[in-house]
Image (tube, rainbow, N blue to C red; front, top):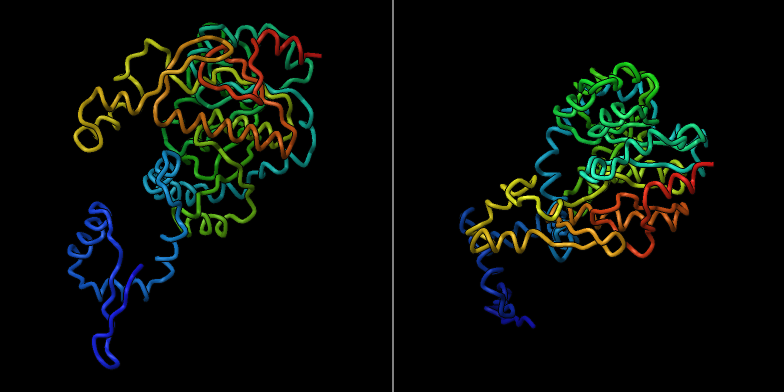
Length: 376
């Protein structure tokens, strides 16, 4: 414990603190030196700005992979999010909130299939199987990501809903792609598809989308990581429903379907992993991890060993691997599946026939079986 020693009558006490690891001490001490502060000046700042200090004390005690990704994402994208919202202001206030869809009650209890953009979608010809079935005709719903929208249309599937949760302008490409063969063009069917977009979607996406059925929402920002951001957005757009995206459009499809009351919900194209033989240096975040070589990792091989995890699916027996980011996405949808099952009674079924999604509460079957079982 710390000790106090009186320096003089009425004077400041000398205070002693326990031994501190060099890494922790150097981090604070170097920051103090950088700003040319005495130790007295440091503690004066602590007193004057106690609100900021309190934030530090209440922040997660351990920087997990999830908190690190959340923090980096918010800090890296918050400026573009706010800019997009400002340009979308008129559009947001002339769209319906997703709560309107839930309030209608038209989706409760209906089976749904959420379409991701993973390679298993084509490895098992899942879109063709879905297109040849009477799943939608018999009341089943199809939720597509923007990434997989044109693939659905090429197969002859017109999704009930398509989502845009990425604020990048590149999303325009996914809603303007040219059809292959006899496939449908997005503009041909846009009026028949409900666009579900995050308030921070890029304004060019909303300008380009031709459909009139538009619904919007917000995703919450962890308040303990970046204080005031969530409060700011909530006050700015208080009428919008907040729904967890899980950090990716595939997981958001599941969140949306569960929120609307759909059950069971089948997943296809939701691999959240790479095929076993896929080169590491072609994965999405390889170059970002490579920047840590020499800092966090000794060499490239150690980086690969620490950032990538091999995985064999317990039911399908397929082999794959996932990286730091996909691991977080995977953990996110597994956690949401438990929460939604408890809160809404949602049953999640993995029909990808591969990938990395597995948990005791998630049934894993082939798509043919899902369609046969839930097409009535």
